[in-house]
Structure formats: structure tokens, C-alpha cells
Length: 118
Image (cartoon, rainbow, N blue to C red; front, top):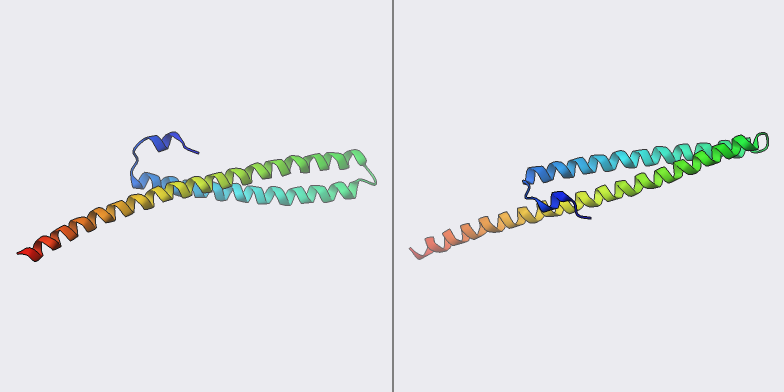
């Protein structure tokens, strides 16, 4: 699950913006998923209600519900993929921050140890 962005050096700000965008897109896809499931259930109900009087219309409703179900599943898959990508990028940010804090603590420790020798 690597992208071209993983192969170039980027700033922490760029990565943080990517995390924000990925999470927003994941949320949008999840909302679309939820709306599609609601509409799917409505169409299935209509299909069952129409079956005794108009089998062709009932089948049409059922097929639309099936298409919505597949679209909802795809949106959920994409949402999950975006969240995983965001977590991966956030992990890289966390590692970067940890390394920077270690670098700073090394400098502080070095200065403190030299100050004690004087």
C-alpha cells in the first residue's frame, strides 16, 4: 500500500495535511456508505411491497438495491483504505517527531555533561 508520495522527502506539514485530507475523504466515503445502505433497505422494502402487484417493478427495485449494496461495500472498502493510509502517514510523523526529540535530548544531555565537568 505504498504510493509515489512515500518515495520523496516531504515536510511534516505536508504529511499532516495528507492525514487530514485522507481522514476527511474516509469520513465522506463512510457517510456515502451509510446513505447507500439506507436507500438499499428502502428499495428492498419497496420491492417486497410491489411483488404481489408488479413483479417486474419489484425486480427492478431489487436490482437497484443490489447495485447500491455493491457501491456501499466499495465505499466502505475505500474508506477503510484511506484510514489505514492516514494511520501509516501519522505513524511516520510520530516517528519523525520522536527522532527529533531524541536529537534534542542528546544535545541537552551533551551540554549538561560538559557543564558538570567545569
